[in-house]
Structures are given as C-alpha cells and as structure tokens.
Image 1 (cartoon, rainbow, N blue to C red):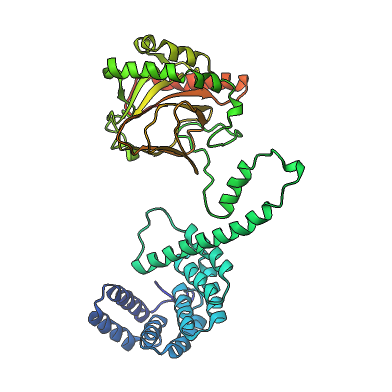
Image 2: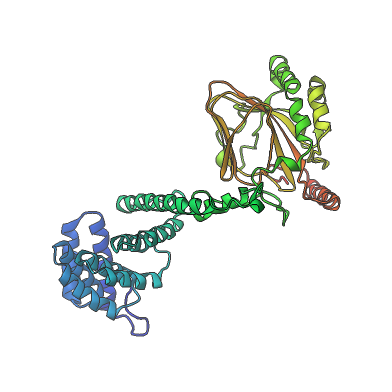
Length: 442
C-alpha cells in the first residue's frame, strides 16, 4: 500500500521501498526472519525515514521491550500519514503496553474513523474498555465486532481466540442485563396487564440482549408484503385445528397401513435434477431418508393414495388448503429416517402457511423455525411460515412421521387469493409455452 499522498507524487525510491516492505510483512508472517531482515535493511538504506521503514523499526523496538521508543516513532508516523489505519493500530498497541488507556482509546477512535467495521480495532477497543473498568461499554463494542463477522470467515488463531472471548463477554453481559430487566418487569403486575401476551415483547428482548435473532421471511419465489411474519402462528387463528387433531388416531392408522402395504408409494421428497445447484440438498437429493407419500402433489390428486386414506382425505377436505391449478393443494405423509437432518431452508411464498400434524414421534426429534425450536408431540398440530428459515432432525433410532399440508395465509383477503391464483397461472403459462426445461421452475 502506498502511504504517501497522491498529490505529492510517488518517486521511484518510494515505490521500491513500498514493494520491499510489503515483502517484509509477508516474510515475517511466514516466519522467514532472515529474508525479512535482508529486505528491511535494503529498504532502510534507500529511505531510512520512509513511514513503512519507521513502522517496522517501531515494531522491532516494541518486541524488544522498548514500548516508549516505539510510541515516539509511531506518533511521528501518524502525524505524517494520518490516513493509514495500521499505524494507528500499532500506536494503540504500544500505548497498551505503557498503560496509557485514554490515549490508546483515542488512537483506536482515529483508526475507527478510517474503518468503522475493522474487526481487530473493535476487539482492541473492547479490550481497553475492559481495562478501564467499563465492562458494559466493552461488551457493547465486542457486540459491534461480532456483527462484522460473516459465517465461516477464516481467522488467524490469535484473532479467533479474541473473538471467542468477545462472545463470552457479550453473553455474560446479556445475562447480567437480563437479570436487571427481569427484576424490573416483575413489578408489572397491575390488573391492566393481566392476561396479556408477552410473546412479541419477549422476542424483542431476546434481540436486544443478543440471545436470539429475529428471522424474517425469505421466500425462494414470492414475498407478499405487509403480512405478519410469525414463526409459529397462534392456534386461535385456525379454528379447524381442534377437529384435525381429533382425527389424529384414525389418520395414524391409515399411515401405518400405508407403511405396511404401499412402501413403493413413498418417494424421495427432494428430487432435483442433478444439473441444478443443489447446495444444502446434496445429501438428501433422490434419497428416501426424507420420504413423502403424497395425497395431493402440486394440485394433482394422487387417487390411489387418497383411496387408501379416506379418513385423512376427509380431514384435509375440511381445511382451507391452497387451491391453485398446478400448484396446490399439496399434502403428504412426511417420513424422516433415523439419524437424519433436514438442513436449514426456506419455502416458496408466504401467501401460504404450512401445517404439521405429528403422527409417529420417537424421542429426540425437533423442529426449528427461525429463533424457536419445538419438539413434535403426537396429535398436537402447529402452523408456521415456511419462508422463515427452518430445519428438522430425527436423532432417534426410529423413523418420524407427520402429515404436512399447506393452507392459505389467513391474512389474505378473498380478492388477494384470487389475484395470487391468477398471477401464478399466468406465470405458469408464460414459461410452459416453451416446454418443460430443467431448472426453469416457478
């Protein structure tokens, strides 16, 4: 990196020194100290007062235990080149050794003015605030540092250790803050608060304290705006749930009959063309580890299957299933094999919601939607938004089986359902005009 101003111009000697010092940094990282020493000496001979040469001299002084001399050099460098973040970070490190907390914090603030999301600077700021006996402020800054990380980002071991410490500090602070807030909220016992639901507030509090994310719909096809994005919906919105649950035992008997008499009717639920980018579905693609026995499939009646399951068909007829030609209803028995996980994924559109009626549930089977995880309980149905990231797992030694089907989102008006229905039909006709092609699916 060139640390001279563009207006001043860059001489051939400066370019040469910058190239040499870049190699010095690389060689030091590779622990090739003898080669680094030779190139540093060459650069120092050409331009002994170049900021990069002085920076390396300061580093060596600091390593040798002379933090005061290193600080003196670094203060001259940042005055000369105030826009180069690594110089401020090095000055802050020297001030740390000297115990100059306020000055270290000021140097880190100058670095953050150049890059407000620099992970190492934020971690160092959190650490100095801890040393200044400001643990709450330190935890807040550590939280900012963690927000800069992307999932799976590789980090040097020293930085990774500091990140782990940051997570511990953020979690500990959240726990302490939660105790304070919970104690305050326990005083709210007046009559006007009786019977009120705290579910939304509790999720808000979880987000404030960093305990759980708030997930939002991320459909793979169509997001209908202004619908509520609950993970699991309140039962009160679905008055037909009780009748469905009352039919659990008869539906379960029909499922058991299917599993005895029509195993060939169970097909892999995931069945993508091999030419598609499978991502998370690679292990389950074309595998009966997640099997489906369809009663309705994308609006097509599976007549022989429905004939085997008349009581299940009657129960489905009593619910507001999605009815879009070529797209809905979809209803099936979902069989998840032993020790099998369905990876995190999202569904197609939030104009529909998904219903689970658990039928056969061995121990150690659970389901996560967004930030909430629930175990299935035979005979207890729920309704969720499958456009919010969700996953499932069966960690038992027996298969798990549930009835799954889609219903219209109850917040859609009759007009909106008709409009969605016609839009989907128009899209299907538009693409089908060229015939079915792998990967072209709506």
